[in-house]
Amino acid sequence: MLRLIAFSFVLAAAAITTPDPSTGVIDGKPAILGWPASLRSDGYPGDLLSPEGCEVHLALFSEPERELLFPCGRWFVPPPSRYWMWLEQGATASEQSQLLATGAGGSTGQRNVYPMMSAGYVSTDTRVGDGQAAFFLNLQPGYRAFLKSVRGGAASTPIRVLAGRVTGGIFDLETRDVVALFRPVDLRAGQRAHMNALEQTAAGVFVVLKSPPVRRKKLDVVLHVDERSMPPDDIVDAGIRTYAIWYSVKGARARLEVINDVVTYDGPELILHPGAITTRRDDMKLKSNP
Image 1 (tube, rainbow, N blue to C red):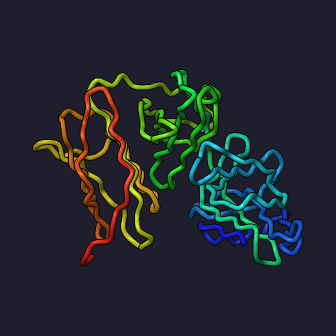
Image 2: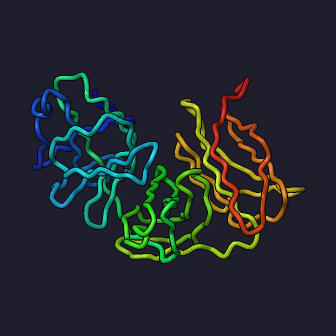
Image 3: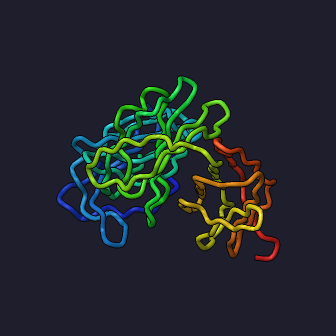
């Protein structure tokens, strides 16, 4: 079966129509179809757009720098796995959602309509080694996290990301630890921006926290260093994952605090090193008495 964890989209009543789901079966397997639409003021899809020049992107959940591409408007069956899925067309892209593909079950295909938003193009002139990848993260409030990563030298080729405030860096493919942070940019629609690594004198901190699947309010993340409480320089709370970044932290140790009505965090202290990035990828947990 195919399961999309995203909004339940209602097809727009436009002159363009999508294929009948009964045609979305390939070699006995249910297929999936991606279709672009305009963006309504409430964030939902508006009129359907032409799929010409549009691509469906699937990035492996466990290895997001590996992408599969399929044309919009056509049925396809991806290899069984869990993916991030989104569309790209011209100077636009959609938000990313999760797709679980098993290749089994169901007698019809699944149509998924995505509203398209303004995008720009980013790359880096900073050297990215063979065992490394560059990542670019959209931080614009109101968006779900839009994260793309590319291996090694491919990072010098412009790639689309949603317009707005964009940050990123370089990480080690084996450990997934961040080794450099980029200077953030405010990316305009259609703009091409070069993002390069900051000169790191103090410590940097890059945090990714995964949330339990519960309803909760937006959360705050604070870094406690000595007697100081430091909010992140950049943060995006995307529901499933929260990304928080501190570009310059002076101190030897720090404690991470999550402030929320339902979830909390009680992980170990962070060890800070001047001139280096401390990476923490961890799970939040439910409060005992939320």
